[in-house]
Image (tube, rainbow, N blue to C red):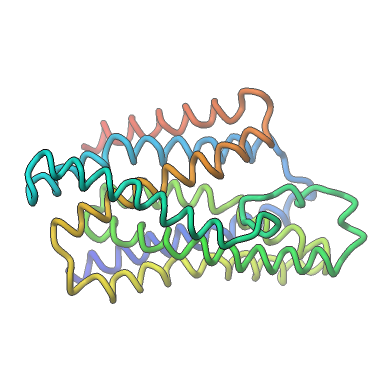
Length: 267
């Protein structure tokens, strides 16, 4: 990996991670969070992730692994890595209790929680920790992909940045309601995203000596599985919960369409 590729990958990973700060700013500017906006944004992010995973990353992974192991074995290894990525993020998700899961935003707008400052403060801090756990493998995925293929890394970083915004809301809203301190709430939201670039740097330090086309193909397939899992397990259910009946689907289709157009224009 050359110097320029390293810094491009690190910058994209940093932008994606620190987008939690945008969610923190959104909470401070608006007293009430528009559920329909959240639903549209989450659906859009899921659409981008699903489309890029199924049309670009899995195709690239299969090509690399087929070159190394043959067409049939390459297809098998691609499938194993894809579902292995799902298993990996699924296990991480199981380590985080539902009550502190960063995608459980149900506490953001509940007025009754305003009377329980200590409970809200604890909720916000635990959510920040949970987000750090979730963002670590996302950072590894964004950095590894961006360093090897910037054209794939940019849309992945874009999609992750969008879905990190509601996570920042989940951190900042309860802390702000508990303390009334805007800067304090924003600082927690921003800091929670730092695990993303840290995950990227770890992947660089650990995987760099072993990087081959075969390992790259496995990473692509695993990243695809991670993004599809996040989309179906977290983003779409939450988007449907917060939106009107079809809002999340409109966002999903819009995300896919934007991704398809961008890939066509820049291929």
